[in-house]
Image 1 (cartoon, one colour):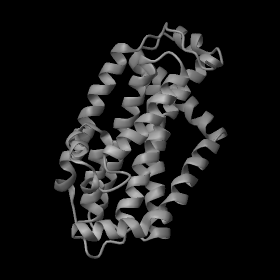
Image 2 (image 1 turned 135 degrees about the vertical axis):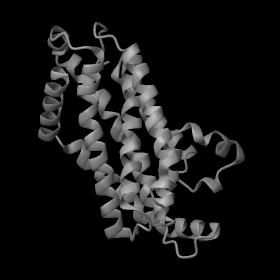
Image 3 (image 1 turned 60 degrees about the vertical axis):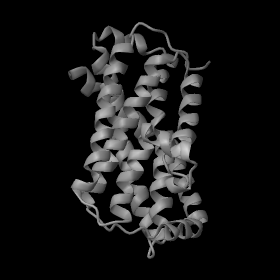
Length: 255
């Protein structure tokens, strides 16, 4: 895995030199959160959470929604190598498809975890998000969601030929999965058909985990199911991505 470790270091240096995408993606949910806190407060109180502030839905929901968009950056990193005409050098390293995908994926898992943690903390400072349950349980939900999303986008990367195709799917997935998974509004407000299909989305399980520790005093046992499903899905998605990924395929970065 020497190739993977070297590639991880390179990707982290590139991200550090050009952080503006992440800066913008931090700012957008912070603008949205205060706009819907009062509305979500009424929704949660109607569900029976009498002392809810609304932040318990708004902050995790925006983190889950925009987190999907941030995860698309791992595909951008892969396609960028083709646009820079440096992909052949990676091929010449004789690194396996698994090592290459790990080299691109691991940095973005770390960044994705950092992204979620910071937004949760800032959400507590500005809109009153309070953690009622276990800190460790919440962190596991964050990590599991990050790993699952990055694995999913790596599968998109292996499947599609142009960066425009991947970005379109990621943007659509963010809104579709976010809506179905209860990131935009509480799941109870969705129509019956939406609630029925919601469990196929990563956002549903992430929100289930967040609700367990923000609306209730949930611990590790309470998040075991959503965390387990997210990690399990990540393993399957990563395995399929490795199988589909072809290092000799030409990707179009400027298409």
